Amino acid sequence: MGSTMLVRSKRDWEMQECDATPEASYLDRRRLLASMGFVGLSGLFPAGAARAADRDPNADKYPAPRNTTFTLDRPLTSEEDATTFNNFYEFGSHKRIWRAAQQLRIRPWSIVIDGLVEQERTVDADALIARMPLEERLYRFRCVEAWAMAVPWTGFPMKALVDFARPLGSAKYVRMETFLDPERASGQRQFWYPWPYVEGLTMAEATHNLTLMVTGLYGKPLPPQNGAPIRLIAPWKYGFKSVKSIVRFTFTDTRPVSFWETIQGSEYGFWANVNPDVPHPRWSQATERMLGTEERRPTQLYNGYGDQVAPLYRDLQDEPLYM
Ligand code: MTE
Image 1 (tube, rainbow, N blue to C red):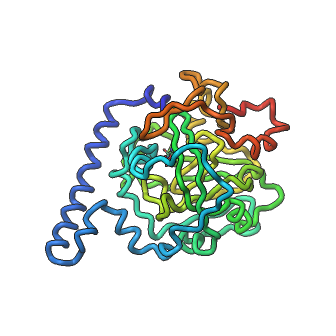
Image 2: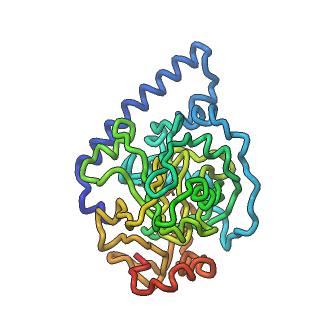
Image 3: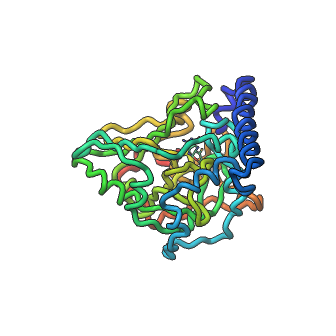
């Protein structure tokens, strides 16, 4: 995001250069196997995505039934735009990380549920997803950088995950953490970032009907660059709240301090609710640019979900709700 312009250096470029080697050698190995008749040509590209989908025990759950309660006021963003223009700093501090993100190994994937819960436990992501009620929802998505999209997510209400986790009454927040694997995620070799990526929600936010644990996109399992195997989507908040590739849910009575808050607390806060009238310290939030079409639209308060979420903040008016 914008603030990282301050800390970007030659190292970004060096890391991208490193990325090329493992992917190239992987492709060479696939080509060799293909020439020996071990893999079909369709397995050649995109590297990783096909391989991951091959072994997904939940693959037959996609496309999931659409929940028509959630409608859009704009055309869907193209799948290509939503899956090739991403923020995923673990794989680089620029938008074209989708190839590098194929390095991510999403199977097996363990998720720890700990902190203020009846019993701490570790669950396999596929097993967890298998028992959850998957549905498709069309949501608006608004990045703090003022680009936006409209996409069909597949997932399940985070409330179902909270019920599964059985938090104690003393839990006030859920802290979520992304994987840590500097060998595969070259961005995590940039030691000046406070890895792993962390985000948090209040219990009221986490159990709100709009809050989704996302496992799919465009009727298919989520690709690595969009946060496979499981990510958060809280559509009324700036996109940085929607943490990707989660490995830990910690229930706590202490407000979590997020990745971006640690880097630049004066620009990225805990609440981060979308508001056209509260500018980012370095740019306006009055309008947004739709990915792909470049259409400019007026930003909506709570990204257009105010009728559903404004009550969450009624007693919090002294908090910096919009940064
Ligand atoms: N999660 C992790 N782990 N790492 C990230 O860099 N970027 C955030 C969010 N979640 C990010 C993350 C930001 S700034 C945005 S705008 C969205 O992911 C982008 O999601 P998308 O690539 O699916 O559009």
